[in-house]
Length: 337
Image 1 (spheres, rainbow, N blue to C red):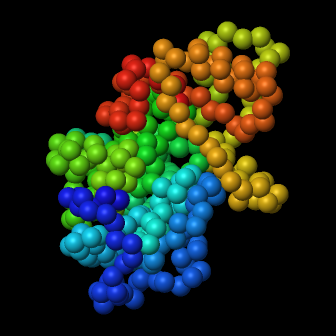
Image 2: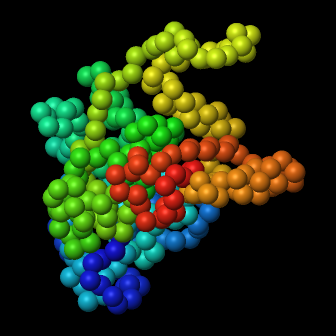
Image 3: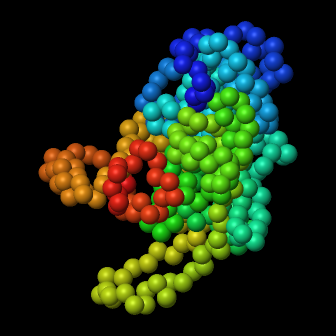
């Protein structure tokens, strides 16, 4: 995360005064903790070790850490780590401090998942940034509700996906997860806890959503909810033009469908294939270039050259579904992801 207003080089080490703060008992320099916090899902970037790991019990612990770094003439790196599913070391902090966001789950006084209703907003959930989407799903379904936009894999933190985009098959209809947030509590690079929305501190709000963690750490997000879908197989099939012999169905519940990647994860874990390097790549391709991309990648590299590959997912969508397209998107009205 950036420390706002700091233009000097980063401190190559953390100052010993850090361990005299009130959060000292929640800081660890244990070699096992250091090693564990320096891993991510990608398994590509190696040996970027933090100097310490913070296990916060509340937002104030994170505030104390960032304020301490900001007040130094030369700050040190601070990075928030959720479930560790970055691909290329984005949640690492060499010689700095990793904030293990999952630790916030140990305090029942933190936000967790709270479902509410508002006459202007409708149903929504106040969700802690450390919460996994699978837990958000389970909690909201108790009320017959669910978020409208998902990722294909649910064992990711809310703060993590909102710091990127949060993309899945629902994007063509509802947009990414970052387009379905009413409000957030964010700890800025100055160590200030700020509530922001499209109408309040909007510059921070739109900077943090899809901002890759460079503008703050998401502590709480107010997520859009709608009624959870019910099964309507007959209605879906009616009106479609198809040959009866080619129709097939796979009967799964709403939760099983959303959590479908979890089954594949368990199978790969049993084969020892889950903890291997994942050189995955996400691309935003403008509609104007999709045919060239198809010819060069799908038809040439994959089919003609027969290069081995993993799963390929393509999501056509319109920028209309983005309330604020992230700066890394191409300037095209329609895009393929």
